[in-house]
Amino acid sequence: MTATFWQKVDKTGRNLAPFAVTVMMVLVGMIPVPVPGYAPVAPNLTLVSVYYWTIHRPDLMRPGVAFLIGLLQDFLVGGPLGVNALLLVVAQWAVLNQRRVFLASTFALLWFGFTLVMAGAVLLQWLAFSVLDAAALSILPALFQGLLTVAVFPAVGWLLIRVHRAFLNG
Amino acid sequence: MKPRSSGSVIRLAAPLRALAQRFSFLLLVLASVALMMVGKIESVSVDSARARVTDAFAPILDAISRPAATAARVVESAVELENAFDENQRLKAENARLLQWKQAALRLEAENNSLRSLLRVRPEPAVNYIAARVIATPGSSFVRTLVVTAGRRDGVRKGQAALAGAGLVGRVIEVGEWSSRVLLLTDINARIPVILSNTRQRSILAGDNSDQAKLLYLPPDSPIQVGERVVTSGDGGLFPPGLPVGVVTAVSERGIRVLPSADLSRVEYLRLVDFGLPSTDLDPSPDSK
Image (spheres, helix red, strand yellow):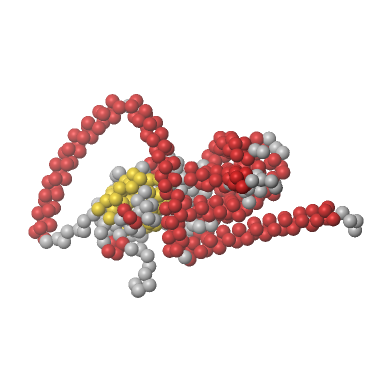
């Protein structure tokens, strides 16, 4: 109530951190890495970020925010519009509904939960692209992408915890 | 009811909020699906919007892709240092072989020129190249594109061919002011008119999101051999004819597979071919029949 103007600015800036970090994840996920066969299976860092913030700060990772980030990803990736937006909105909704379970659980369970979300995301993505391209696409690249994302989850999660503590504590 | 107003307000508010939340979820899902439809129907305006967004983020992508490229180069040079001697021997042998080919090429060029002047062949339009750095890959399993640092102000136009090292990489599908997007020839939406170098069989090269592309519309009894080179045919006037595309790797009942000559997974720089034909504008104009 007695917050000064600069305190408000500071608070707003800090509250933007989840959004900013997730946008950064979109961009970092698009870095070309000269490893054969990497691009199709590059880990979906955006989903990790949305998952993390939905569990820890659902007030800052609302459905609308997830939608906007997904839309940005769709624009940048060059695929059909709306696929990533749909993916992130559905993921955000699913995680939010089970949030209490995740909040009270250990890291291993958090990891397991993400595996389930990723599995759903792989299926949804495959379904959306198959329908939009009107062809039965191979699900294998998406599956490997899912496995790689699950594998990097602890590292990215650690990074997000650091950001969380640095910007949003207190 | 007992006058516990604050409690009942909370009890009332909770389902209301849940309803609002569910509603916004449904709304956003519907919006996503609507966007997919719009993208299918209004692809031209979606493309220009996409080009604008890509333009806006290109400087950031450019900046963050540089350290990654540098790190990759350091690792690569360390690995290469290890087998420098073997590599040197191999390159010397290859150089000797290539010098012989150079002689053959010079002789053939001279012969070609004299035959052309005898026949009064109209020369092909001059070809310019625009060099560009790759700053982003989609990071998606179902899309094969690249974002490069050259746009309209550098002379890039929609439909231009993109080359890297040994051969064709793809085609420009979207042009921003200082960035553009290349659809790789392995993408499921890519179609490139090609010709097989030995049998002179014309065909369409189509990607299917795997590492190899396939040839379409070939007669069933065409005598195509594994190892035959595939080059662009220049049909449709978009690409210059004769750009190397790839090599036939498999001929079977399930189709003919072509492995691209360029290593699509590690393209760092590419050249966009400015063919100089006026008909390279792919945008459907209302006055064209």
